[in-house]
Image (cartoon, rainbow, N blue to C red; front, side, top):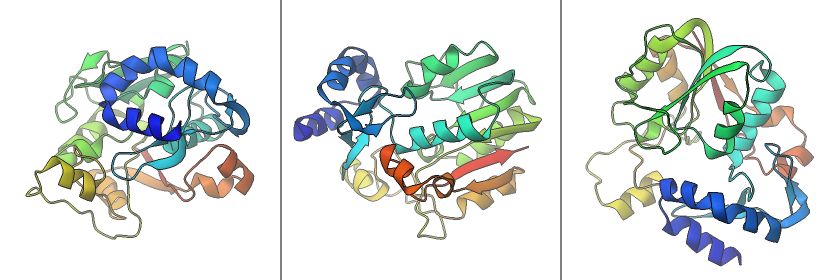
Length: 254
């Protein structure tokens, strides 16, 4: 069954998968119901999670009911336990809204919640992150996760994020990152889709961020805290929620 799911998940483009999943995921969730692993986003438990990934699929990482990955579950726990996101009136901008969060955030009556992206079927405002249709100093919180690695001019994109964030505001800008390399790697000469997927992890990624990502955010003006939230959780919690040990949450403030 695992191999069938793996083939299915990697064959279908992500936007289509989002649409199809509304019908398929309830069935998968029933088939995999158990007690070993728990998705903290909806509290449901399973005997195993699904595999996910393009070139080298990771086993047991995709939660069947919300389709959350390691980074989604880690961020949920951080927002819930360490911020006032779920309790304070906030004006929020959410780029490329993740399916695991979208409906839940939209239902929070204390949030003034705006979603945006060029391609996502969940985005209300179709916009280019490098040329946003919002006034400066507009948002208390900006969530922009696994977006910047797709953007050729990420400097311009980060400048726009800074522009529209309110002074005193904060955000989470997660990216796929290799903490073993110091400098971010990019190579525009690699155009073959399979080769790009092999090198960058996904055919539509344009770089591999290194440890210098945090300094890039600082160079735009953000105050950056590099949060290893898994260090604040027990070994049992990391395994129960299927988190990526050592993954850094980039917490930015203006």
